[in-house]
Length: 218
Length: 218
Image (cartoon, rainbow over the protein chains, first blue to last red):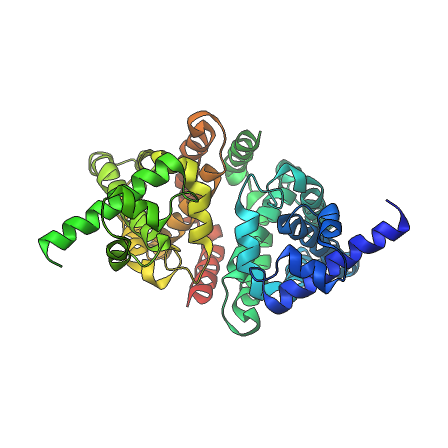
């Protein structure tokens, strides 16, 4: 892509995201985006086949910002609870401007055949990045992750975080304080459950859970 | 409602559900439903304001069938694992005819402001019924539910079941065998986790988890 066309592509994205925030997702058509960006409709479609593609772009941007916002806390904190709280909080912070169109976003994202779905193959880079963020949070943290969970826990945490995001999208409390309180409470619980998972009495059930998850995913 | 109008209402529902299954959700308009049922469009709208209302009706029917299909296993089995397996399997059985339009159903159901959402107030009767089914499965089962979890576990199991349904909707394996294998594997894991939850060492973390969940919900 030339510098000029990369610039136009960025213009389409910025315009679209601004309009999603201000007018809502439903009301923002590709035509309106092109008009607002002062480019032709054909040009807009050249970069993005549909609004769904723009949602995927948003998903990938949010992911990058999420990492950038959370990484400092991960590097300077060793407590796993505090690291997880920081990762959850950073996620809410970067998603905040989009809360009002969260439902439309979810509806687009939830369809497994939709490329914007976090579960779709086309999103695998963003998803891998998101899972990687949880891997970073676990690496070198205290307490250490039990060996049996080291490989799978980042993805499980990411799935749990997706559930938190679902809660957040549906959260009508002021500034989504409930979601934030829930995330802050869940982080230390995860840490304590990990400590329990290391006990001999829990080992077998943890192993069986891991093998079940692997089978479901494969 | 008179017998005649109840009959028409049922006709609209049966026609709509049949069309959802055969033509798909998107393509089935209120107009097409009215035509197929040989009633006026106004008459169709008299009973249901929108397709979303019909989705809620479907949700409530599935719920009733789910209970009817699962209740026998609950009554004749005492093993909690087997009861849970039966409840999950019954759910998949009654939802099976709708698998192909599961995504459209989810998209309608996921919006918190949508009356068809299982999380919406308008669905609270169906949701209560669904949670009640898990309460029945726990009552008198072996092993017994720890006292600290007795009040909240039915709802937690229902939430877990919603996650399974989400997996099932996205499941492209033949006859959704992956979802079925996952459900069959999860049931005994739940039972074993409950046994662990009774240990003194786990008591505090279980209590804290319960109080966090109650706070998030209130």
